[in-house]
Image (cartoon, rainbow, N blue to C red; front, side, top):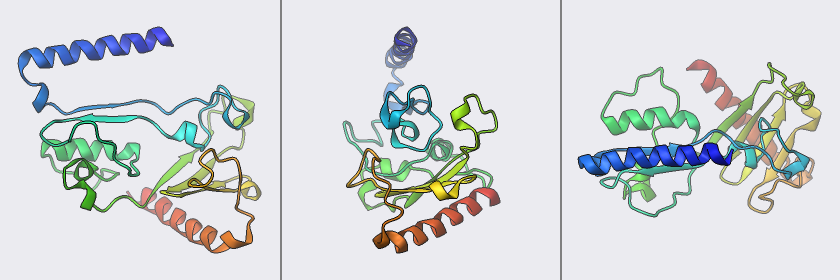
Length: 203
């Protein structure tokens, strides 16, 4: 794995060197991301990466375009992988067709980004049709992630649904779905999750 990452580094270096030599580097959108991550002991998991916890669902996203993006900034906003395509289309001035899922995050990257309306939540889902490992048997889920909370609905086993307060419990170690004080929050998140699912089906 280390050798593979080294080859990615070297290849990216060659691309950047060519862009610099041609004088096009500051007029080129460079977006760098990756696949979702594996667990390394978190939640008692190792080689798995399909489950809806933060270590797996988060991925790096780096963007470079000096005319648009200020250097060395971190933007605190929810972005989904389906947002990448419309963002690239908007960068290039192309039309974002109705068939394109996702929301362009280009406005967040501009210097006026602080005044831009941010995505309120993202849909996370998995269907374990391939069942490569026995522990993901019947592990289909749909989850909603907001700035602060995550609700996980296990489709075959709703009795194991989970709720996490990511502000007070960023490692998702305490499932608080059964707390009486969270009943209203659970109802709201279930409703919002349903809306996200319906939106994804209608596109």
